[in-house]
Length: 207
Image 1: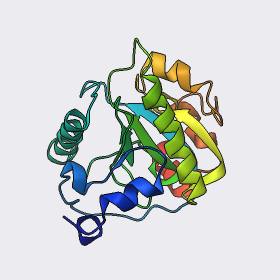
Image 2: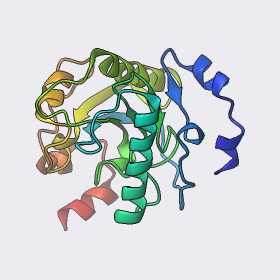
Image 3: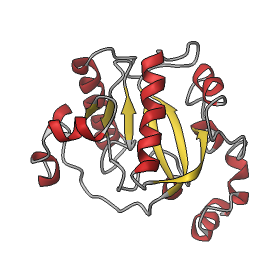
Image 4: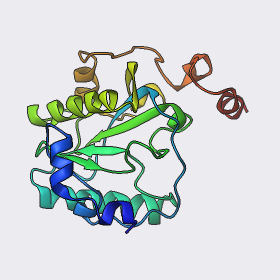
């Protein structure tokens, strides 16, 4: 486990946020194979759902879900770490993934301009519990306050930047009522017209 997680007291984490915050060390995360810095503040927040693992309702279940995702992302996908920056459980706690300062692997071609927040569970047919939604919103607000997310950020669902059902139809409809929701890009086909995307990324997309 990296030193920056080993020596970080849980009491400080709780004081830093107005919601339960579970650090990597507290859910027993594996050490990332490698990290790349994320250029912050980012202009976008991308909302995801897990589909699997299923919704979790206490720290033990959610920590297990985090370990399951990290194992799948590292050992199955060959990524350096769990892909998301943060996940939120139905217990109303935020679980630290890659954190604010590390480039994610959560939205292909969009990682360099976004923070990815995943709501643990399958939200195709039902909306997450109120406390899960509230913590997701509060986490975004904390990111803005701490200078990691631009104050005039744009909020999108994963399906708007990738050909996917994520974040599930019910959750996607829900986030359209949130502050800063942006209907553009409408789909991954619009990425070449996203002004915030670097030209180097657009060249990759156009190949």
